[in-house]
Image (cartoon, rainbow, N blue to C red):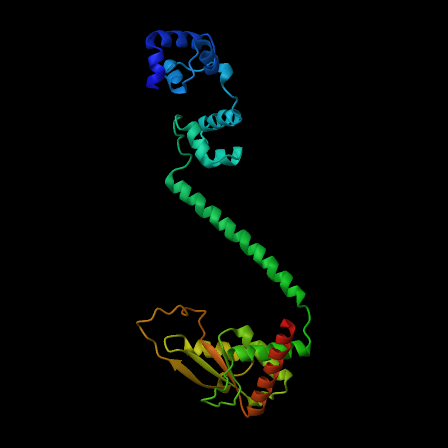
Length: 286
């Protein structure tokens, strides 16, 4: 640039000409050609501080969006509402309206929290209704159940939740423990299907000692259709005050153990059925 300046000893004179041409509405290229100055840095210095003429400015596709965003901001809208209205980014909105006064909040902090709680409650209610419909639809898909299906279900249920023999401890007796009353009823229906007589079935309550033991005994006895005298002595679990148990309150009724007497043969049948289920399932993967 020093060499270029040496060609033009009267910088101020050149600047005066350049500014005059700029104010006449000439573009930088036109000024360059008129004054024969082909150094861009020098040319920029000569017209420094002079805005370009309007006709040289390219139209901005976002001009309408910017104007609309400013209008909405003046109406008191937040960035989120403007974004939802115009579909543009928050960063662009912030750039366009940052010189405008911040709108007064529509709600107090307490009102805002109350609205959020109300919205969340409505969302949960809507979700519960949707899930209820899903459950009803799924239940209708199993309108009937064959004996074969119940047999498979019971075997699978037992193998997941029932007592099983181990190589180090052979216990060939059918014992099923669960806290879900519906699971217990399904298992009892399965026992009836495979021919287990009612008198071979025993029941025992297993529950924490701090719970309502008599109430739980009556609940399970009513569920399986026997008197409390038919229940075997309840197994009480000692309460550890250092643990933070969640299974407390009126709905906590412990677990019911279903014990089938003289059930070694039935246990081996269950194991055989389960092996069959595994084999058929693996075949489907091949």
